[in-house]
Amino acid sequence: MPFGLTGKRVWVAGHRGMVGSAVARRLATEPCEIVTAGRETVDLKRQIEVEEFLADTKIDAIVIAAAKVGGILANDKYPADFIYDNLIVEANIIEGAHIANVDRVLFLGSSCIYPKFAEQPIRENSLLTGQLEPTNEWYAIAKIAGIKLCQAYRKQHGRDYISAMPTNLYGPGDNFDLNSSHVMPALIRKAHEAKLRGDKEIVVWGTGTPRREFLHVDDCADALVFLLQHYSGYEHVNVGSGQDVTILELTRLVCDVIGFDGKIVHDLSKPDGTPRKLMSADKLRGMGWKPKIVLKEGIHKTYAAFLAGQSVIRTLEGAGK
Ligand code: GDP
Image (cartoon, rainbow, N blue to C red; front, side, top):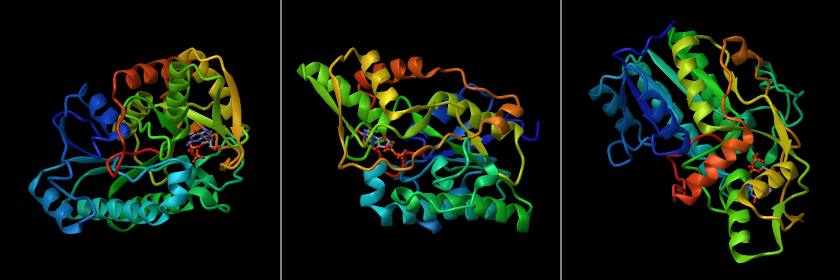
């Protein structure tokens, strides 16, 4: 094992977000110490604050789950936030980790780093082989820069910093705000409210034909802790379920779980985004990891969390596109 966690101090940057909180829950089952720091302690956009925090707090490993994230409309509306916040946070943490001599960094990206028309399922080596999907290119460029930072610090300074690219994640702690959320929490909320109101239909953005892959955030956290312990390499690693569905199929599944049997109508004024982004899961499977939560079960769990009021309006501290 390249990195045993016993007795190690692991900083989960972005621990209040959906991914960060799942990673912290998963790390709590390991014999390590979890370090967290809210924005009141360290503003990740301020280089000096990050460097001082890392100098004062002896850290062995960092999981960078802090990011500015959002769905297709939020990306389109706030391009400056999506590119700047993500670039500055990842650069501050990776440079700060190097200065403070932190042994391991795990940087999290997203499947949107890949070209819009990449060959499916998308292998890790498709990175930078074509044009990006324009609706989220700002976020994608920042995340590609994060991968390159890890590679550059490995090449120049011999740092064991790695990157993982999760697919579309969902689960407890997701953002259920309809204007800024991703499709899964949006559909859960829409179907739930339509059922309560006794509506005859729910509205789905776009044509419903785009295909997306989904992974429950607890499976993602398990994969990330696995990579932190077992993977050391220059190339990033895809973290996905290896299966995708159309948005229409997903809508039917969500409606079925929630018990809404009205009509599904399409708002064609909203964008479809990239037609398909199924990632190849071969690399991670080859290392011996596989997901445990099937989609329907994951939707049930997420709906239960939604009903329990675990939704949050996500700001800088969420992660996972
Ligand atoms: P993407 O994966 O970056 O495209 O981000 P999203 O998760 O926001 O959208 C995925 C797909 O779901 C796109 O084709 C959207 O048009 C579609 N979609 C359908 N209904 C909704 C909705 O209510 N909210 C969101 N965010 N997307 C929706």
